[in-house]
Length: 107
Image 1: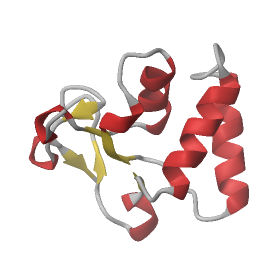
Image 2: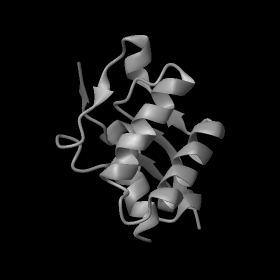
Image 3: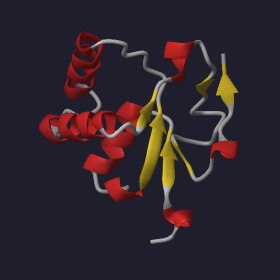
Image 4: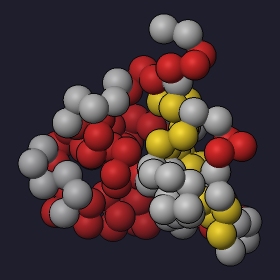
């Protein structure tokens, strides 16, 4: 697969859900620019617990594994932690884009 098939996600919960459901291959994910602000391990545990109960309820174990793997590999960017604008999923046309210049940012 070429670079044109790679994707940038704009929502940790929705993107992991797509991977669980087989809509997107994990190997196609360049990174996920999320709206979360997980500064500590406790923050990560809290967010993952919430997503397990909601967005990933059909397979919470796989969702958690995918999310933690993306975090460990440095593929989760959290601009909110640094006071930077965050992606607007709706204005960007969905939670997957092929290029950062397709992202509409919000404050």
